[in-house]
Image (cartoon, rainbow, N blue to C red; front, top):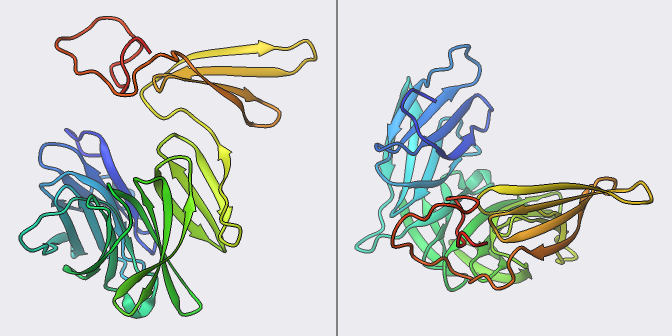
Length: 296
């Protein structure tokens, strides 16, 4: 990233794997475009978004077009001849924040996008023009994924209700078909060859076949702040266990041979569920990054 950049809030690769777009959370909120085939590591183009970007995605059929979403916006960006032009989507009088974006996988609908809104709806876009929306849940839609198979386009949406809602695109309308229950808020979703892979807000990764529609945990991890506790335990039978503790107030026990977590506990069972507002800086505690109080 260029000098003076801050954290990267979103990243994406073009459909031909030639370009990489990365959003810089500096004061100007810039998306840098890099040419991965060049030895020069400097961006080949920049575009100023002026709004916080939470997610970006490239058009699967146009190698020089991507979209960003975030606070109060959906912006289309077209990269050509070293310049990137932006076109902000029109939302009328009411601005809507979006946390995720997915392009249609149907070649006949190459200008169609789906965004997960903070209003609990999946919105359909034709380019920068906002179309109809489908109600998914109360609270935000955190993730969206589109799959086109056998002439049918399906959209998978992860909502604040801890469900993956499956919708079918009929014409220009999304119709809800089914729901897969999860034990956490789905923050990312991918579907491939009849299987679904989902990352949860809890730090776990779950999977299932679409036919079974029952999620199984394949990876359990911490999800908040720093991992500040680590202990290796040698058992009498020669087995090894690893205990970890983090700012999410959780203890995880891992089995190295099975490469997975065996059990889970809490560091402080009496910890409040919401972080108290601090009146002044408090010294001590494990981390300043946690959403839980320092006593956890």
